[in-house]
Length: 435
Image (cartoon, rainbow, N blue to C red; front, side, top):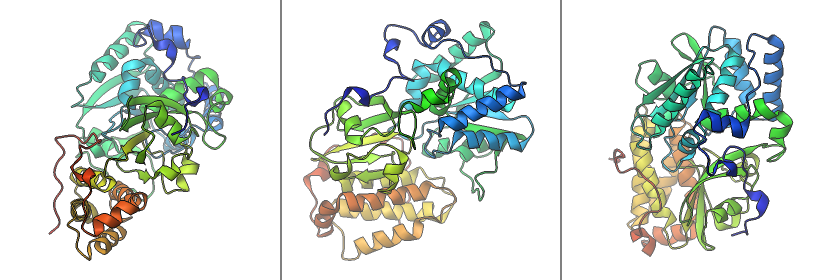
């Protein structure tokens, strides 16, 4: 792994100055960050200038899709009516911790960003969505922060904390909005992603908690300041949860473009690794030869990968990549919305083929069948869930090609019996096995 250098880690959202303070208090938040500039949503000149600052900053969504924030704001403004701001802190990805860290460490920064978005859109209400089964106390910290702002006369807009049913797909924006409309919280097919989602009749801006925290900093410091970190194509910093075979797992703030191996070294990854899963359980395995790749969308796209939800899972050389992929595939099959064939039948079938490979029981047609199923599933689901699983599986076949060949010949490795490095929830629903 590369040696960690001083500029590798950043400190914008998660400042070292937080040590010894209580940033969940409004007073300490203002002492650290300073006041937000006046939010003049009824002033057309201010709105235009702020929207231009967001566009100039290059801020993109940090929830996985990476959609430009300025375009998302513009789309909601064109929709007419009185919009609603939805803060997506559902964090269905099992390895991700960044929303919990943000909302328990610096809740007022996220609420500032929501207030900026509301002012730009003329929204009167903000709904912060958290998983109902989260035992971390995040909801209580956030409710205290909301109440403190109200007592200080700084609310400006109504803020509601909503506990929603959790699960992997619960944070997909259309599923979240469906739940807020008192319908089953399942992803819906959207032929045109530019068409705004609606809660009731209100067009809904659904933004990840981290994205809104960055928006609060842009409102304070401007676009040029935001772009002073990261790269020209991928400006700013981002939060990355590093998990797996590391000494110091947790959430790290890095400049976009920081090499993957440098981020992993900061978390205490071993020198000898089998690979790193980039982007979460719907992400991509990269082998050791690719770990010098910058963590930013352009460089990762060349390898068929993406930053995703900002997760890096390190796999030690003693672990089995095929086995770990089979475990993820089985979990993801159980976490599907169950509303189309690629999920209901295709994903369990992929998981079963991988499980046969992992334990050395693959037949002569297993590999051809696995690749054929993957090609049939991709692009045919009602949402992107099956596409993510296919990307994961196909990347494993490349990153662990040497192990795969041995497994395909019927030789299971010692890593098959090793404890998993993955944080797969125990209450995951078992996926339906293929007939």
